[in-house]
Structure formats: structure tokens, C-alpha cells
Length: 244
Ligand code: SF4
Ligand code: SF4
Image (cartoon, rainbow, N blue to C red; front, side, top):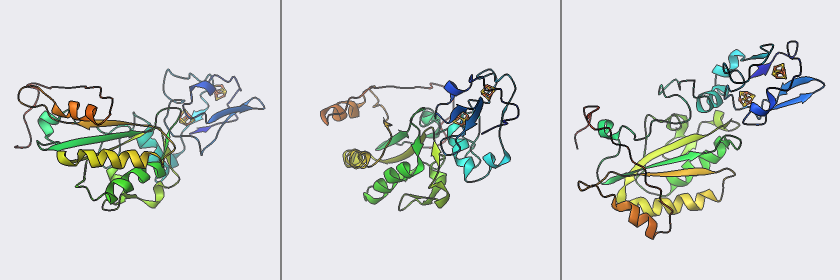
């Protein structure tokens, strides 16, 4: 994002809206630190900042690699080119009854890395994906996930070189693995979490049994995790795309 300093009146209205603290005011002009800017688009969004002079603008480079990596992962109004997914991640498994992404015998894992105000370096995301890839577990990266499209090599979890200096509001790492590998997977994530400099939320996605139970909840609690069960059931809203 850029500010046209000719237009800026230095009113300061925009400064507190930036989730990355990238806008500063000096000599009655607002300026954007491009290293800090996550290209989230908040300062330009209609009805949010209401810059009195319309000083914010996006240079074309924002939509070209590598800067576009920030844009498509940080701005929910932008669609990721390869997946068509807007914002930081996917709809995860909220439509699993139709897509069948997580099959019986498997568990889905989502790691939402970063938050507004904290952000996430892609290098931190890579530390997590590399640790998971190195674990020897049977990890199936989710194909429709924007982070998966940034892999240089899914077998090693390395990201494209152009990701190295990029920083985003947040991004979701998404994969599935056999349910009997859940515990070592969580141990791997716990160990890797000590190497990163931001926060993440962990989603464990499992299918309910026929009787409505989710046995993984008690297992996770027995392993010391604070579980907050959350469910979504889209009864009758779609035809399953994949046979069990
Ligand atoms: S809101 Fe607009 S005019 Fe006011 S400081 Fe920010 S860029 Fe400048
Ligand atoms: S695009 Fe987002 S991060 Fe960048 S200056 Fe505007 S509000 Fe801040």
C-alpha cells in the first residue's frame, strides 16, 4: 500500500486502523513502512478509514509476486489465484459432508498461524511445515489450501524462495493424516512451536461416530489439551462428492 504524500493532510485518522502498525505520522505526513505493511487493504477499504483526501492507493506491484503473497493471504477481499480462495485459508472442513476431505480413519489438522497485530513471517510457517514433513508421518497436504500452493517441495515442507521475506496477517496450514498418528503429530507441532515467533491456533478435525460421539475429544483431554469442541453439520445441503 502507498500514500500519496501530496494528498495527505496529516490528520492522523488512518494511523490506529493499521493492524501491522505500519503507518506513522511525521512532519504532518503519514507514511507506510513497506516491510511492515501486510497489504491487508484495511486502510483503503470503503467506509473504514475514510481518508478525507483519498490519499491511499495500491501500486500495481501489489498484485505481482512476491508482494501478492502478502495480499492474497492478508486481504479477505482478494482471491488467491490458484485456488480461488479468499483470504488466509480455506473453508477448512466446514463442508466435509460434501467434499469428504477428511475420511473415516483420518484426522484433519489446521494450524492458523499469526493474528492481526502480530502477523506471521512465512519463514515461521515454513518451520512448522518442514518439521511436519520431516516427522515421517503420513501427511496429506490439502490441495485447495493457499499455503500448499506456496510449497517448493511438499516432501520437505520448504516454501518457494520468494516467500522468504514475506509477512502476512495469518495463514492456515492444512493437512490430513491417519488418526493413529495424531499424537506424534501433536508432539511434532509442540516441539516446532518453540522455534517460531508468533502464535497459532490448532484445529483437530474429526468425524463424529454414528452415535454422535467424538471419541477424540476425551483422548485429547487425556493428553493434556484444552479442547473446545465445535461442530458444523450441513444436513441435506449438498450431495457427497466422494464415496466412503
Ligand atoms: S487519513 Fe489520509 S490525510 Fe489523514 S493522515 Fe492518513 S493518509 Fe493522511
Ligand atoms: S494495507 Fe494493511 S498493513 Fe498495509 S498500511 Fe494499510 S492497513 Fe496497514
